[in-house]
Length: 487
Image (tube, rainbow, N blue to C red; front, side, top):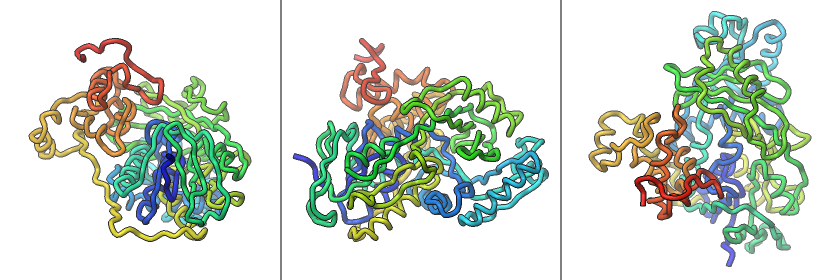
């Protein structure tokens, strides 16, 4: 028998998870249905993590309406959900008079979009703010509100808080078909039935936050017909720096913000991202793209040691063909279906405001939202052994010696932290799921030393044979035959 909910959200990327968390405060039964076996495995994973301030979108677009507001909300969301967020400010570097004119346009855009404290600055101020910025930079747009996060950490934190407030998460459940019943969407009866390999899900209201699969979900539900373009981006991660770089942007192009150099919340440097239309699903890294990233990065930060690359990866932005904007609202074709589609850049920055906007759209559509008396917006951040003060480290080891058993040497991740990542709700069920939650395998050796230990811990905690442990999604087994030291 199909499970029945008031609301089903298709997609557990940062958008779907943020919406789930926003709506979890209301007296409604909610389910998040995810095709993959974990949170944030699409565009949210292959992402530079920048919380753009909102000066780039054209005024009047949906992007413009949610970007600056989303950036503003990040301080509150980080505090409530316990994820790392650094509001460092950023600069768009200009090198000539033509660039300066473009920076002035961006400044005017930003003012129209509600971005605070934007200013055009000269070389002296540029190098006060970021000493490593190119000495050739003649001017810059200084924006104090820009920041950065780990986008998958934000998605995981939001969904953990949603689940703690009663939301159901169904993983490994790609939607194969959608049946739509007749009658009005406001009826108490269910309207949509989602058919998935994990079982059918019935709901009164359906929210489409399926990222690059949004067009397919809309089609199956009998709603708007649109096509997604796979605008692929390659990204390069460099080893940790003694001092975290401020985000530095070039003057943008019509389709991209260009090659950006930024620090991360964990001290690495990221060079992000190329923009090329490729075949849907293409996550290959290309030598030409990586070279373009390294060349573009050196223009902004000439002393950047690009030999310190630890990882290159790629993903696809979910772009709706024919528009460069977000599609957030109730379907004009299918009442009861709400779309959060085309959430490309600045999707990470906009996520809290997209969730806020979705709540408003649903209210305006007549969905009754009554706040729960037991709603708790706080999610306590899990212990991060590497960042913990010495006294807390000692306290953890005293409580459980496994906190002193270091598994990942690069990131100083002990066994107990990996166990905690697996036992969280929803917890890790793969090696990459562990990696995203506690960084085991994120360091310079890229899991060369710790992967076998992580596999053994997963097998023990999940009650399966090591040969059944997955790297990531279905079929990605790592072990064939006995694992040394594990029976």
